[in-house]
Length: 94
Image (cartoon, rainbow, N blue to C red; front, side, top):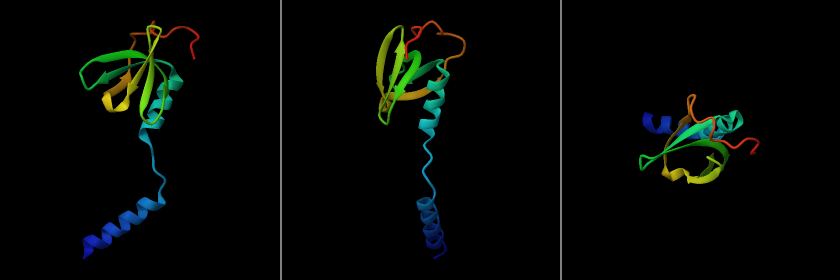
């Protein structure tokens, strides 16, 4: 009986709190900084470029002057590129 009471309380709390979207805040920060990012795909390949746009399903990464549309279901990891790849973004492209 205690477990059911606890579960009902947790479900009620979940309904009152707004959902926090970790992805959106992470991607907004990366886009705002305009620094190169590494996108590791599930296939093991890595794409390095600047995050230009994103939505619920995909990212657009500018790499060597080309825009790549990457579906989120194909992504394993995204992280900031450290000190390399600064030449990847074409200047003034926004």
